[in-house]
Amino acid sequence: MVSVPIDNWWWAVALPPLLSSQHAGLLFFSFLLAFLLSAFLAWSYRGGPAWGKYWMGRPNRNGIPGPRGLPVLGSIGLMRGLAHRKLAAAAELGATRLMAFSMGSTRAIVTCHADVAKEILQGSAFADRPVKESAHGLMFDRAIGFAPYGAYWRGLRRIAAGHLFCPRQIDASESVRLEIAGRMCGRIADRSGTRFFVRDILRRASLDNVMACVFGRDYKLDELDSEATELREMVQEGYDILGKLDLADHLPFLAFFDFQNIRQRCSRLAPKVHRLVGKIIEEHRSVAGAKRRTDFVDVLLSLTGKDKLSDSDMVAVLW
Image (cartoon, rainbow, N blue to C red; front, side, top):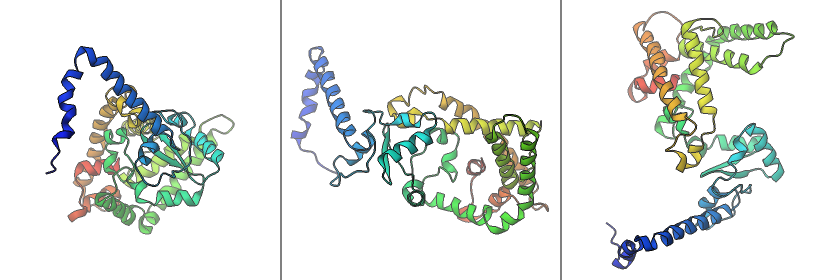
């Protein structure tokens, strides 16, 4: 236990008199002034306030170049609208291989160089990046895309590499992919001469492929099937929630208020996901051993020992 000299506790004795009505205004002003000074000092660093807090007190202060943005907020405005274009333009303006910027209290970097991007994506710092609150709410913090770097994440990566993306599984699902590609081309041909969003067709084709490989089901998500319709709506809602810029992730003082209604939307969607994906898992359990094409649900159910996952973790991984 660390002992603290009595002299260091002078403020505890002086605090009650300072909290009297006579000094309340002065105390509030002092705290406000200290906050503004610290915010300005952090903002003065390259990359903005979040990077300033990181570099303060460190011997090497030659930070990564980047815009300062605004005090407290940083360059969070770059993430609104077509963020990828704004970030690319800002990075090219600096003409450096790396650009640092702040999203509120979150440190971020961006690069327009493929080799630098590859190094970043393969690093442990990227694997252990902060998880969005919406990812927690939708259980993605237990899936391979958002799980924190560690033994659990490495286990998921090993399972995916050995069973989902292995050459044998890819060859086995080739006929399914060809069928889905044919349907996708047919949808595009049917809309010839009209204006349409290619993104919607690509998204449905991607979902068709995932559902076939992961769940072993040919949903044909453009057809009027109740389960397929529910799944499509759930995935669309999940895409929308995860894609939104949640200000509370980067400005902690907003977390309590949930101005963007993201927490409430997650609480409505998560039980639906548990029910639908849990139902599919139970159906696979009931027909275990039957002769059919093995999918990723079968693989997860067959795991034993340290690789065995709980039902809730399986829902998160499959979802």
